[in-house]
Image (cartoon, rainbow, N blue to C red; front, side, top):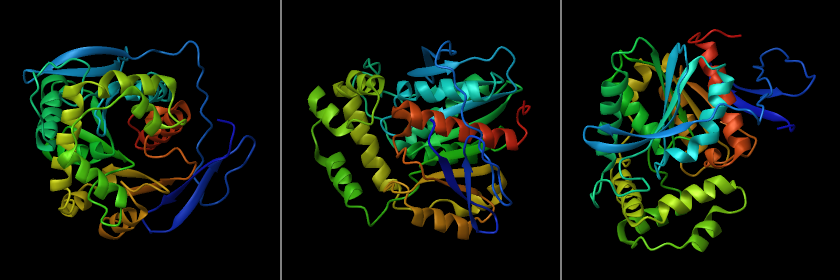
Length: 329
């Protein structure tokens, strides 16, 4: 974490500005400083896992409960929707918020170690309903504000949840968002073909080969424990197929404009799921949305290594503090 950290922020006037944080560096005019993450490896509050029944569906949760929370952050994963991938991120976000917020990462239905649903397949639409049902069941009667954080296709899911529960959600943040198809991406075309045709037979060696050296040992283990399950891979592919069908449509720009002061997106420099052309489109259609570009190279799968998890956790925490949803100690 000792390296230069910078991001490019697109303000409401559609001008890019560079903000960086370096030991001993001063913030110049027009810059937004991000303090260096001071995360102590040991001891650190540990996220706990539990199974929660949501509308009769077994749901894997990864969470840290604050003793005196002022808000609840709900993290919606991408696809695969495995909550355990976000362990470092959840713990780092809790620490960056000074223990003032409860943090929950919610897994998608049947993206789990056990086949609780006996082989049933769940579409993108059903996964959206599932997140709405969770909030209405577990969080609807709490006095805490809710911040939604959606990663990849989770950003699309989060926006849909926000639309349905506008009076309950105080802020939405999309991380490396997958909001619509990228017609210029050969990779997306290939994945779309695989989702329609591939049988889910994967070995540990294949998983390790595709993940590459950037993933942490813990993340590789999570992938192997979950993705090697036949029911999980079938659901990953089925959900992907329904994503590619739905995301041929444009996002609901009318809603985004109406809530632009409560919406933020973080893009990556070279991310085919959320290319910078999509950022430019958002800036034109909803210029009040808070748009940033992460330039440190943490990639789309930020949650699968500690540096990426720590950096994004600090980014989220700073957004929440600027919205005065918690006290800024």
